Every structure is written in C-alpha cells, then in structure tokens.
Length: 287
Image 1 (tube, rainbow, N blue to C red):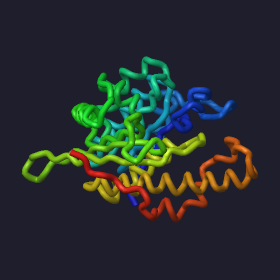
Image 2: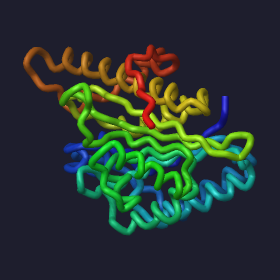
Image 3: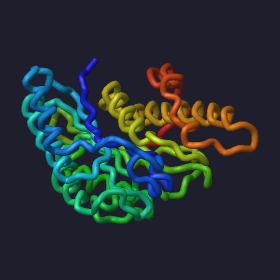
Image 4: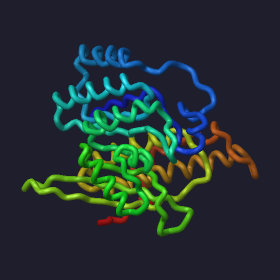
C-alpha cells in the first residue's frame, strides 16, 4: 500500500447549517489546541530525522491559520522534490452558501499558493466560485470553473456539492468532477462527470474528511478513470450515511430526531463498504 500523511489540525463538520453555527468541529464544545506552523515544522523535522518522510500522498483539510497553511505548502514542495510522483489532495475549506468559515486572509493563500501545488482538490460550489471569481448558475459555468481550476494547477477537480438543479428532482444534489490527462503524444484529454446524489435530512460531522479520503483512495485505484473513482467514492458515502442514519434512528426511538452524538459516522461498521463498495450511484459523462 502507498504511504500517506494526513495533516489536518481541526476537522470540520458537514458543510451546512451546523457548521455555520459551530465552525470548528460541528459541536458546541471542543478542547485542545490548534497546531501552529512552528509546531508542524518541528514535527516534520522529526519525521525527516527518522528518515520516514517518503510519502506517496498528502491530504489536507480545515485550518484557520495562514502560517500553518504556508508551512504545508513548503512541506509539499519539499516532498515533491524528493518524489515527483507524490499526489497532494487538498480540501480547500473556506465556506459554503456565501459564508466563510475561516478568516478571509486564508483565501489568497489558498488561491496563490496551495491550489497551484495541489493535484486533486475538492471544493464545494462556493469555494470553487471564490477561488476562480466566476459564478456557477449552469452546468456550462461549472465546466468553465473546473477548467479555470485546472489552469491554476490541479489535474483533478471535484465540486462536491452545488446548487444546480438535478435532473432527478429536488431530492437530489448535483456534484461535478473533471480530470485532465496528458496523452503519450503530449496532447491533453479531459474527462468530466456529473453525479446526482440523494439529499439527506440530517447533519453529520466528518463527511467532508471522509469524502476527500475516499477520493484519494479510489483515484489511486483508478488513476485514469474519474468516472469509476467518483462512483466508488460517492457509493461509499451513501453506504456509510445510510448505515449511520439507520443506527441513529434506532437509538433515538420512534418520532424523535437523532442527536449529533447519535449521528456519528458508523465507520467501523462500514469497513466492508469502504473497502469494496457496491456501486449504487452512477456518474454521467458530460462534455
């Protein structure tokens, strides 16, 4: 198996109303400290001294500190010099539905420093619009935004959620992905896909983290087939969320809305689905 490192000082909840209320963890209370840039540097220097810094993948998520983010970029660049094939997966957590979760001074760091060194990014619609300066009102807009993000650096872009209308009705959410590849003759090809995902009337913590991790895993298994990688990733999400909802309603009892602790993702119970999910959500290839 490839070696990977996941640097994430704090973990956000699902991107929605709950996170706007509790922007750090999705809960009303939390303890501990946020890792600083200096502390990250010390940890990385320790890893180097032990000569265990040969990574194939790096995955980053939520942070609120610009210096920490800049240190991540420095580390990624050093790791890529040692291993040009390293894949950096970035979830550029900035906000959703017009609201930012992080200080505004993180935006230029993501746009000018982080995204250009990333290989795979997983923004939602608001973040994709913010990074490119272009609004998404149609599927054509979304394709143009993904192309703009490709031009910034990443070869794979997945817009995890959007406000675009679903062809299957109001109970579905639209996600889109784009993967740019270079053929042996030097020409470029781009595969773009659209996913219609069931909406769920519940608030979860950690779904963004799980999605980014699963996309990393399945693009490793299908590096040249974004359609299959997305189908596997979204199917994992479906299985985990459905199992979580069933368990939460059982705990809450008839007619009662599950609490946040009852909606903790059933990860261990979903081990088989995470490793080999039955595909229940199919992607449509778009032009």
